[in-house]
Image (tube, rainbow, N blue to C red; front, side, top):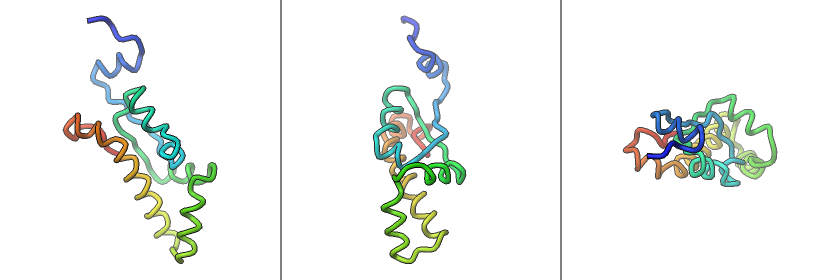
Length: 109
Protein backbone atom coordinates (compact mmCIF):
# COMPACT_ATOMS: atom_id res chain seq x y z
CA UNK A 1 0.00 0.00 0.00
CA UNK A 2 1.36 3.44 -0.95
CA UNK A 3 1.98 5.90 1.88
CA UNK A 4 -0.63 8.59 2.44
CA UNK A 5 -0.01 11.91 0.81
CA UNK A 6 -1.02 14.27 3.62
CA UNK A 7 -0.21 14.53 7.31
CA UNK A 8 -3.93 14.29 8.16
CA UNK A 9 -4.26 11.05 6.20
CA UNK A 10 -1.21 9.64 7.99
CA UNK A 11 -2.71 10.61 11.36
CA UNK A 12 -6.01 8.97 10.46
CA UNK A 13 -4.25 5.80 9.35
CA UNK A 14 -2.38 5.79 12.67
CA UNK A 15 -5.73 5.73 14.47
CA UNK A 16 -6.01 9.41 15.38
CA UNK A 17 -9.55 10.77 15.28
CA UNK A 18 -9.60 14.35 13.98
CA UNK A 19 -12.02 16.46 16.01
CA UNK A 20 -12.72 20.12 15.38
CA UNK A 21 -12.69 22.27 18.52
CA UNK A 22 -14.97 24.90 17.01
CA UNK A 23 -18.65 25.09 16.13
CA UNK A 24 -20.55 28.03 14.73
CA UNK A 25 -23.68 28.73 12.75
CA UNK A 26 -21.42 30.18 10.07
CA UNK A 27 -19.59 26.84 9.68
CA UNK A 28 -22.94 25.12 9.36
CA UNK A 29 -24.53 27.70 7.06
CA UNK A 30 -21.63 27.83 4.60
CA UNK A 31 -21.07 24.08 4.49
CA UNK A 32 -17.57 24.51 5.95
CA UNK A 33 -18.14 21.78 8.53
CA UNK A 34 -19.33 19.35 5.86
CA UNK A 35 -16.30 20.25 3.75
CA UNK A 36 -13.95 19.56 6.68
CA UNK A 37 -15.59 16.19 7.26
CA UNK A 38 -15.23 15.32 3.58
CA UNK A 39 -11.83 16.79 2.77
CA UNK A 40 -9.88 16.50 6.03
CA UNK A 41 -11.58 13.56 7.67
CA UNK A 42 -12.97 15.47 10.67
CA UNK A 43 -14.95 12.91 12.66
CA UNK A 44 -16.28 14.96 15.55
CA UNK A 45 -16.79 18.44 16.95
CA UNK A 46 -16.36 19.80 20.45
CA UNK A 47 -18.00 22.93 21.73
CA UNK A 48 -18.45 24.81 24.98
CA UNK A 49 -19.79 28.14 26.24
CA UNK A 50 -16.65 30.03 25.20
CA UNK A 51 -16.83 28.66 21.66
CA UNK A 52 -20.49 29.67 21.40
CA UNK A 53 -19.79 33.13 22.83
CA UNK A 54 -17.11 33.65 20.20
CA UNK A 55 -19.42 32.42 17.44
CA UNK A 56 -22.21 34.75 18.59
CA UNK A 57 -19.88 37.74 18.61
CA UNK A 58 -18.76 37.30 14.99
CA UNK A 59 -20.85 38.10 11.95
CA UNK A 60 -24.60 37.98 11.58
CA UNK A 61 -25.33 34.26 11.49
CA UNK A 62 -27.39 34.39 14.70
CA UNK A 63 -29.14 37.73 14.17
CA UNK A 64 -32.44 36.38 12.82
CA UNK A 65 -32.80 33.75 15.53
CA UNK A 66 -31.86 36.23 18.25
CA UNK A 67 -34.52 38.64 16.96
CA UNK A 68 -37.13 35.85 16.93
CA UNK A 69 -36.24 34.77 20.44
CA UNK A 70 -36.35 38.35 21.72
CA UNK A 71 -39.74 38.91 20.07
CA UNK A 72 -41.02 35.74 21.72
CA UNK A 73 -39.88 37.03 25.11
CA UNK A 74 -37.18 34.42 25.66
CA UNK A 75 -34.83 35.16 28.52
CA UNK A 76 -31.07 34.72 28.19
CA UNK A 77 -31.05 31.14 29.45
CA UNK A 78 -33.83 30.12 27.06
CA UNK A 79 -32.10 31.83 24.14
CA UNK A 80 -28.75 30.20 24.87
CA UNK A 81 -30.38 26.79 25.21
CA UNK A 82 -32.25 27.14 21.91
CA UNK A 83 -29.28 28.47 19.95
CA UNK A 84 -26.85 25.86 21.23
CA UNK A 85 -29.35 23.04 20.77
CA UNK A 86 -30.03 24.08 17.18
CA UNK A 87 -26.33 24.27 16.30
CA UNK A 88 -25.43 20.99 17.99
CA UNK A 89 -28.35 19.25 16.27
CA UNK A 90 -27.31 20.62 12.87
CA UNK A 91 -23.69 19.56 13.41
CA UNK A 92 -24.82 16.10 14.49
CA UNK A 93 -26.79 15.85 11.25
CA UNK A 94 -23.64 16.67 9.27
CA UNK A 95 -21.70 14.06 11.21
CA UNK A 96 -24.39 11.35 11.04
CA UNK A 97 -22.68 9.42 8.22
CA UNK A 98 -19.49 9.27 10.30
CA UNK A 99 -21.49 8.09 13.32
CA UNK A 100 -23.14 5.36 11.24
CA UNK A 101 -19.89 4.29 9.56
CA UNK A 102 -18.01 4.04 12.88
CA UNK A 103 -20.96 2.56 14.80
CA UNK A 104 -21.00 5.54 17.15
CA UNK A 105 -17.30 5.65 17.97
CA UNK A 106 -17.02 8.98 16.13
CA UNK A 107 -19.50 11.33 14.52
CA UNK A 108 -20.49 13.06 17.75
CA UNK A 109 -20.74 16.66 18.88
